[in-house]
Image 1 (cartoon, helix red, strand yellow):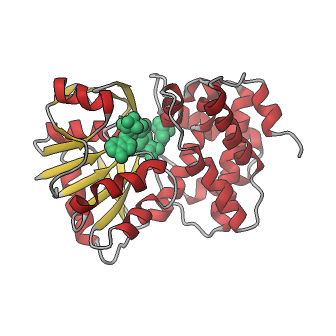
Image 2 (cartoon, protein in one colour; image 1 turned 30 degrees about the vertical axis):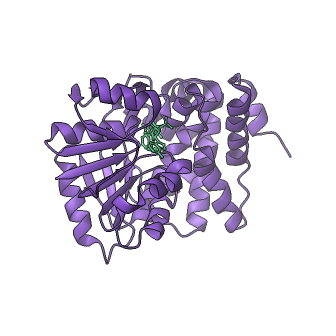
Length: 334
Ligand SMILES: NC(=O)C1=CN([C@@H]2O[C@H](COP(=O)(O)OP(=O)(O)OC[C@H]3O[C@@H](n4cnc5c(N)ncnc54)[C@H](OP(=O)(O)O)[C@@H]3O)[C@@H](O)[C@H]2O)C=CC1
Ligand SMILES: CC(C)(CO)C(=O)C(=O)O
């Protein structure tokens, strides 16, 4: 079976190496120094899923249709990645491993002949240097088809192919899974703003309050949108409802639990990793999605709005924000 991975960064590189280890015939697309390193030395996976040097084929863009294509680029890069590989993607099974809302749906609209699935990765992966990726917290990937009625068989095929390499679970509630993951991804902004790991951010009481407040805003927006949260990582409909209504101090237990689950290896999150590499972040598709969805139902989301603005400030200045300034900005009256 041939599997192509478009965007062999932290997540894509990890999946490519794990699939190679499981005996799949893997080809990846990559760019620049990363492509040269993979061509020369292979793709080295280390960390929580063990060590493996994968001698995978590497291309600028796919030249053949694979049995399964995995798209694992940041949300803002997905349209271009699909366009560059469109002829190889047409009519095959496509898995879009991406945070935020609506990513798999956009790919499905561009590839109507393909069975398109969304993948929510509940592990933490880091891009260490060209050709090297690591798992800092192991966890499953939740797979769900965009069109659950049409693509049930594709869901079974992809779950079986990927499940041979990494832990997977399946759902037919892709939108609910994207939303629950979006609540989890409220951990991303503060590391990108401060330069600290998720675990360190959560240890600082004022930052923990900000994170809790942004998560609560996101839960309130999701409920107003009529979202049915898909259970994951101990989060589900009941807990998130209680979380959104409990006194702030009690609600802070949730980000503390989430940070504990990440273990002791510092997790920068994928957004801080982009900042460290001087690349644009995905923040408009994370906290920015909460703001957009809030607007659609007339709900203000000042905490998420200001977190987006602070991440953009760091992107443009290249300087992290001192932790004490963050709550002043975020909770400031308009
Ligand atoms: N890292 C993590 O722990 C997790 C990440 N996610 C999500 O997974 C998705 C991927 O994130 P992550 O792996 O961290 O991101 P990375 O930035 O590490 O990897 C993305 C890779 O895609 C490459 N890329 C972008 N456009 C193209 C293209 N047109 N052709 C070929 N390669 C391309 C990038 O290359 P270049 O550097 O040249 O731009 C980069 O190597 C995101 O939506 C993220 O939110 C989900 C769960 C956990
Ligand atoms: C779950 C988490 C926070 C893992 O790092 C993630 O999805 C990300 O970094 O984007």
